[in-house]
Image (cartoon, helix red, strand yellow):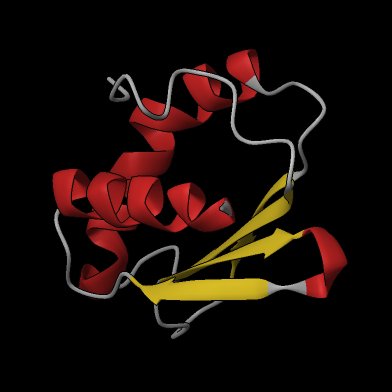
Length: 97
């Protein structure tokens, strides 16, 4: 289940979220679990926000957040648990200010 921080509307300055991961790699397991448990609540709270999931074999797990004025930030998620991924995502999204 998504944390309260991820179950509410994100800042309007956030324009896009992209999650890159490997569909079979052990290092991306936490990112895959995060998608399974948190994607639906995030989209329910932010229906207009593009939340893109990109899967490619051997790709390290990373998340990118694009904010207004072209500012982009990212976080490495490789090898993290689903709970740690959730914390990284919440910290990244909170970086809108």
